[in-house]
Length: 405
Image 1 (cartoon, rainbow, N blue to C red):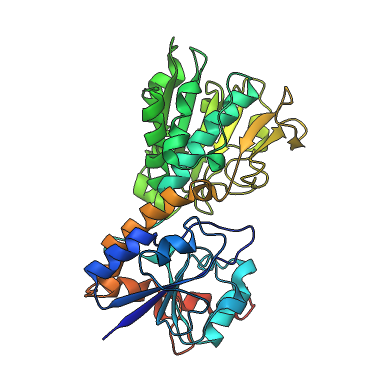
Image 2: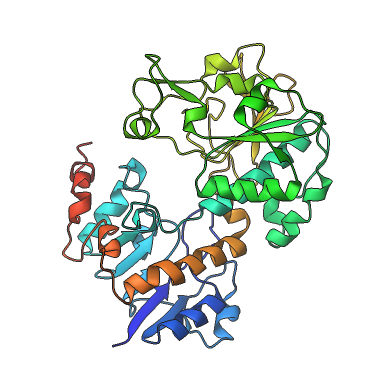
């Protein structure tokens, strides 16, 4: 039995050039799963042009109404939904985001099965797919670009103006850092690993958190910190990582000590509501704070990284935060912390990010979708059903859907 898979035109503003599958990946998909037919909706914004698909014999069409499964990247506009289909995209609804409530209502009303990429997890609860790696890659690059501009040391080409990752990485030799430069990096997930890829290419030496805080160096260094390195129990008892992950209450941050020795901070951690802020606005008023650049990849607004007061954009990625005035200023202001807080970083390298995402789809998701799924991973990641209901795992969204919370 043939299955028709459609790749939808991204409709969000500002435009997102990413795509779930590049042209050559569609060919690989059809080879590995011969029962699948793929149709690509016409788009003038996609990183891969329509002709790149059509010249490989992949149908480029106006409408996907005849498809069984429809895949995108960002939220699909309500007017672009098609009833009784199976959609895959990042819906940004599982945290009860109010700005997407109407979207989820429309999905239920139109009896659409929505599988959220963010909810696709293996039997151990680990996420299967995402753009985190490329957020880390671009965010780290942007951080160093910001540092060069802030201190008038060097000028890197913006990532989004580079043709691809290769061209972006060709800019890295321009980086000239002070000999005593120190960088602190938070996070060990996909974002953290992406960040580390760029640090390895730059060639900065890694040191332990203890060395970072106490020792002096005559070369640029960085340290990578986990939650145990910047949190402690408020009652003085030993820190237990699994307890912290279960409930951040009863803990306090020890991160401000890094602000006193680090020139730059790259934030790539995951933060959960109820956990301590890494640092507050009051912490930044301490005259001993040395940090002048924060590249906040996690980008939780008015949250754990107090200098991040708004997201920035690809076109204007840097703003200044004045610790004493507690407001935004020009990032070149002598007293300002330069903040890079772009919240859609993978969009700066759409071809590379899409290829990575598509490869993971083919290797980790499609075997479950088109074959056996013994752990019901697709079902468990589907927020809604074709019966016009929330699925069992997402019944907690009912009050949100009804506008009661």
